[in-house]
Amino acid sequence: MLDISVVIPLYNEEESLPELHAWIKRVMEANGFSYEVIFCNDGSRDHSWEVIEDLASKNPEVHGIKFRRNYGKSPALYHGFEMAQGDVVITMDADLQDSPDEIPELYRMIKEDGYDLVSGYKQKRYDPLSKTIPTKLFNATARKVSGIKNLHDFNCGLKAYKHEVVKNIEVYGEMHRYIPFLAKNAGFSKIGEKVVHHQARKYGKTKFGLNRFVNGYLDLLSLWFLSAFGAQPMHVFGFVGTLMFFIGFIAAIVVGAWKLISLANGANPGLVTDSPYFYISLTMMILGTQLFVAGFLGDMISRNSQERNTYQVEKTI
Ligand code: UDP
Ligand code: MG
Image (cartoon, rainbow, N blue to C red):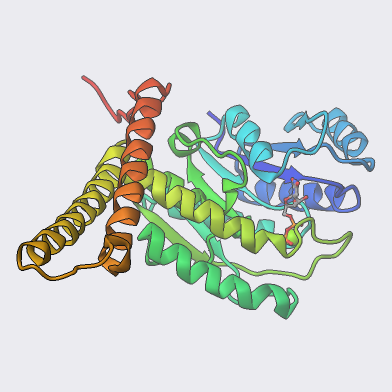
């Protein structure tokens, strides 16, 4: 088995690739690692693929995947992970912002300290303020929601994984921001961090705009929801729905009883629609029923899902 697979997702990074490859090669040879480099070309429209073909023809350790169009960083990582054969898998961005010099220490942390996943932490960043400030907020939320309290930088492109980890998680959509959370949900809980050097982008420009933060939050919400209630939607929706319906029902009884009591006493109670409780009871009962139905539908969907019986089995003897 190879010691290390380096997986590199890239989109229009032709200028950086030869330099990045030479640097990785230098580090690997200096440390005597057996390795492969997997370039995942995410539908680049420049000459990135020609550069990769050229590198592969001269270097047997270089492999490449070419998407027909641009799908995103997560799909690129997904395919890189499928191909990776190394004992330790390292991901890094193609833009030379992440330094290959970090590889030996990351490898050591996985092999000797026994981490399942080690994430880079760009403590000193060379990015514009418009990106670093929202990133701080984003990471604070991700820490809270995922319960992985020791990570400062979820979205760092430079990460190292045990072989089993990349084979047992499914990075999809834009979930590359939350790989530690995916790993944790799959039962890989020894997650560490290493402060890494970061550099300003040398060529080209960033591929993600400000909408990364909006999408990032929505993904986090859905991931949190999936991990907390995904398997039993009825437990949340059914509970809240029943509770609301019950409150609404009590309110309806109060409204009705009050009217009857007033009539019995010979007073003029007016219309039930004059009472605020009437509206509370109406809304509560409608919302409660809807939530209940949502839970029920969710349960039917999860019953039919292909993943309903997918569990992480670590060992059998
Ligand atoms: N990338 C990709 N597909 C995309 C967008 C980005 O493979 O649709 C790659 C990109 O080429 C780079 C890495 O993902 O290697 C990180 O992107 P970028 O440097 O633009 O992000 P930033 O450093 O600004 O967060
Ligand atoms: Mg970058």
